[in-house]
Image (tube, rainbow, N blue to C red):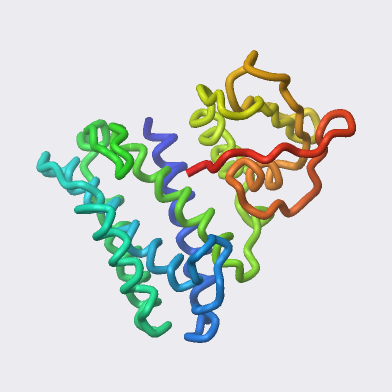
Length: 241
């Protein structure tokens, strides 16, 4: 557990630094530009990442105290706080992000060892051990650094994080029967993943480099070419999260 947890905490730190670097020089005019997420500006993405830090901090407090503390009081509260944050001037939003990141980092570092096995509940109602919280933050900071659409792509995401993201998507899609299965193959004889339930339809094999497979699996812009087996096109996948 400790080795995996240490790796996750390192990925959180690197991803947080990458996200903050993308926001460092942001201006009011740049933040109101559209992000890679439909209907959200870049400011919405920054506000969301800041509030997600506080939401995950709630789960760590839950593990530490034993007092049930949901990530968000309600979906409306979550949406309202993001909208409020997105209207802030760039300087204020940047400070808010840094402070939220600092609060989360401090609690991640200080959480007693005995608390990491506590069970908490995500905003989607899934019960998880609290040691999954660092991975939840890894997803947020790295994927949303791409969503800012300010230059970061999956080519900038560490290979081990790309692989873990595809692992995550494959696990979430394992029992899905609403799309034809897709087998992902990393170039060079690397790993393979199956998205969807085998036997429900013909499986399509898609090959590419690891960053491109991770981008494809998570529904983000693909930095490199993908190749479907035969002469077919690369299938469209359902939404990941």
